[in-house]
Length: 221
Image 1 (cartoon, rainbow, N blue to C red):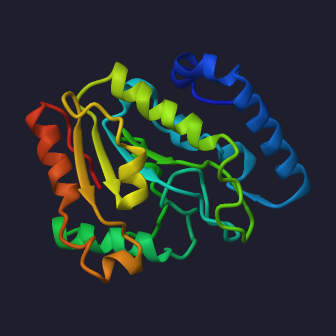
Image 2: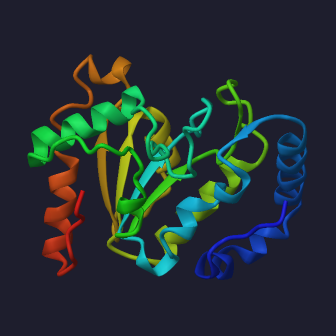
């Protein structure tokens, strides 16, 4: 698997790509894509990075796995391709946006418009086999994305990390809270949201309040 990733990220992560675990991961992913249908499309595996250069990151949202249904995943967590029905978690994200900021649900669930404004939409695992949730977990992706989060935490400051659900909270436990902002909530999945752990967190307006307080442009959610 040739790592075709945006230049600023390549500069930050280049030593990672040479490590044995990543070479093993690359071989695994290459074989999986050659022998099975996998998502996202190969050219979009690193889309989260390509849409959001290292020095432009203002907000990080941590997801777990890409969607494993046909035509859904586009390399950005929670996001789907244009024209694809909104999955349940994304519907709840848009519902919270509506109650928090009065924004109507957009026609497209493609969140590349967020990424272009500095929102890194990072899944912990960047690939998946079709119809097999979690099938590419524990192959090295988690180690790689831990390094991504650690690198941002060490080299940048005043990034707002949105940790939704137990998995994201665990993934973000090494973030330096003395120089970054961490907003916690339950996961937007129906299981969590319907128990009262998601709705009303007002994360989207809180992000913009923090950005404005730092003299940064707010996100046009």
